[in-house]
Length: 356
Ligand code: 1CP
Image (tube, rainbow, N blue to C red; front, side, top):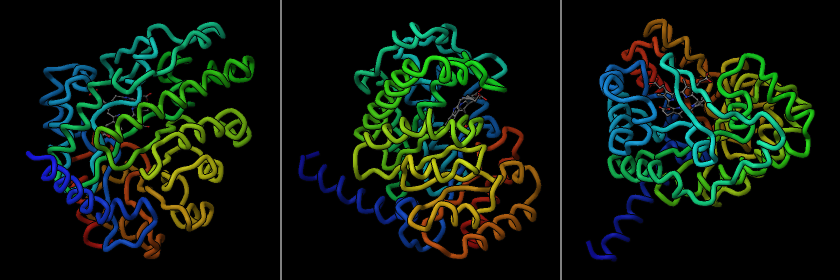
């Protein structure tokens, strides 16, 4: 293709994304209808995913761009959602930082050489270039190529605290005792560690943006274990640092579930659109956040285990709570559960399209 043709195609596609309900909603603009997608929309509840997963480990899937792109495109086509997210994982960023990542057969992640001392934290390098995660950049390009122009592609990363929680705890935790003790007993090393994670995550997201994502989402999945004071002191400045270093002009969704008391601080850390879980009613969350912010959420994922009628009822209820205000992206308040019947996930998307 001639350069002029390529540029024309690029700008033509760009105008489609910019006009899409998803792209407008995350920027708090009026939309013709409420956009919807689901966190973890490609995953173990889907038979197509399980069929591929039988042949490869989860990490192999993440590191094989053709398969990763195919998995997400299959899910998007099946569900009819208004946005795609790259098929990857927040923990991939830890590998180029020298942390040895595996997933246990039961599904949970494990870091074989967790950060245990102040010296370990000080020795952690920064991500120098997004090309260190070239497989993810390739997944972005292939997924973007395969998507309908109107469907924006979301890139993502873990927030500094959630990445630090995995790096220090060595995997999933119930009480986050190690990471909380680290931040309180080694405050200077904590600051340095969080800055390195924030800037590495920004480099990673900016690489994804250059490779073709239109929106980025930051997952602070474990921030909800913190008090408001601890979040304010130990976490908020570094999530802010990450967000401030994202290429300007790319809308940011900031999601820190688990503790609605944190919402004002999560908002202050930044993001155009704030993720909200089901623990707080949507109208209350919007009142707290202020109507200059878009919101994403907030259906309890367990509702998708019920049936079509129940799902439709809850969709209507949440839409009523939103009261037609701009800047609403319908989503679950957390990732879809693996027990979810696929037809219920489809019924959810259809209900939002019908009533929203
Ligand atoms: O087949 C398998 O066993 C793998 C299951 C799986 C999948 C499909 C994992 C393991 N990660 C993913 C994909 C994934 N993870 C995506 C892209 C797919 C999509 O959304 O459709 C995204 C955005 C994530 C993000 C992610 N990974 C988060 C943030 C969201 C959240 O759930 O809070 C977290 C915490 C992870 C870590 C992780 N990866 C996988 C698991 C089971 C976990 C959580 C483990 C734990 O409880 O600590």
